[in-house]
Every structure is written in C-alpha cells, then in structure tokens.
Length: 356
Image (cartoon, rainbow, N blue to C red; front, side, top):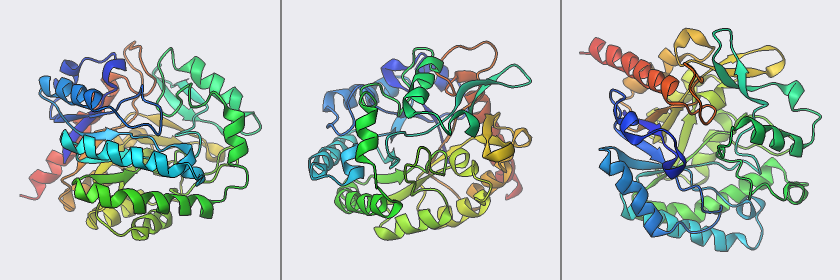
C-alpha cells in the first residue's frame, strides 16, 4: 500500500516538510478548493500543486476531490456542460501524473456532523454526530454551526459560495428519490469513465457520510448492496470505490471487514480512508484515535484484509483528534493523523513479517 496524507494546498497550515517527516509517507492527497464545483480546473493551478508536492519529495497521485456539480446530481439539462468540464479536468490531471480521483455523489452536503470539537475524557476534541442536535433543526442552522466550529477554515464540502442559496437547493431536490439520484450517477459515469480509461485514471466514489438520509435527502452509497450496484452499473476497473471505514462504519449494520475484503479482492478499490469511530446510543457516533481498541471499527481486521489481498493502492489516515494543544482545521490536525499513519503501518509491517 502507498501511505498518503490529505493536504489542502495553499490553504493548509501544515507544511509539506512536516508531512514528509512522518515515517513511511509517500505522497499527499491534494485538491484545488478555490474553483467552484462544476468549473474546469486551470492547468496552471494543477501544475503548481503537483510541483509544490514534488519539491517536498512527495508524490501527488490522488485528488480529493473534483466536486460534482448539483446540476449533475439533479439531472438538469445543464449537466452536460458541467460533465464536459469534468472530462477536461480529468485529462489535465492525467497530464500531471494523477492516478486516482476521489469524489462523492451526496446531495448538497458532502458530510454531516453535529459537532466539530466534541471533548473526550482525555481532553482531545473530535468530530461527532448526535441525532438530537440535527433532527428537527433547519439546515441553515447547521450551516451556521459548521461555520462557527471551523475556526476560520473552509471545511471541504461546506464551501460558503455553494451553500449561499441553500433554500433554492433544497427546493430543487424536492421529490428526488434514491432511484432518481442513482440514475443520474449512472449517466455521469457513462460519460466520464471512457475518458478516465483513456487517461489511465481510476475514479473512486466515496461512501455517504453518514450512510443514512439527513434532512430527507436521498443516499445511494450506504452499504454493500449500493457499492455492488454502482460498480456493476458501469462495469469497468476505472469505476472504483474509495472505501472509508469511518463513513461505512457509522452504521452498525455494515460488516466492514467483509466489505473491504470483497471489493479489494475484486480490484475495485484504488483508494482507502481509515478512521475509527465509537457508536453511542440512538445511532450517534463520534470519532476517536486510530488505535483499534479506541473505538468499534476493527482496524486490525481491515489492515489484515489489505495485506492478505496485497493491496497496492493508496491509503490515508482519515480524521484524527485535535491533541496536544494543536489549533487547526477540525479533524485534520497533524499530530493525531501522523500517529494514525504510523499505527496503520505498524500493523501492516507485522502482518508482512508473519507471512515471510
């Protein structure tokens, strides 16, 4: 496996040289965040991003994410223009060595949390989902809560310009079913997968976060059955999955070890996020340290699956705690994610040694 670290480019307060100092770190997972969803990414910006990583001796072969415009998800006539822009961005990213593009197909919100800094007993803080703080409130209230909790950082998927007219977006999604959303995803995939194949790029759809409906919005990437349906809808290796142990693991009904084993063995998983969560009452959950015993995700079991299947794709430690007084983008501090990267590699190394 190739160990990577999410990096927010010019908006990231963590220097690339710090990321390079993490043992085993081979590359960063980057993105361009000042370009609105649906617009073509300028070649100059892509080139600068890749070269900046290269100067720190880090590869930039995974992009997260080229956001999908809501007109594509809604199936509006204007979607074809945005799909053409998406194709152009794929071609340019390929020119600069990108091999995987992670994306999601969640309406309006890319992910949902009730808290960005829930305190734990050890005085660290984490991202958390508490139904009582979300159900029954208006979406605009949650937007304000995310803005306040982000400490001045733009959170991926919660860009202010995209959410400025939230009432209009919700009005557009009225009556949208899971079947309708899935059909719009298939239309999108049928258009872009031939381009990805020609460019030697693998697309990797990220699971819904959380994997259930929030504010009545449909969800189509929730479980094994959904993942099966997606990869077989356009049955090409370039139509892949970005398995996320935190998103899928938020639902107790998802057998993570089985899901990872199944799709990794099929070679349909070019990219993986590993994070740990703890389940609470009423479907609530919060994130914890990557260490297996810290939460309810079988971290050791997941790495064993990757080792047994000789996983050669990209993996990154996902959301970490904010620890040791670090200030920064919630979930994306340096220290706990670095600890997670080393912990995951330690399990991998031990398993590889056993197999000799």
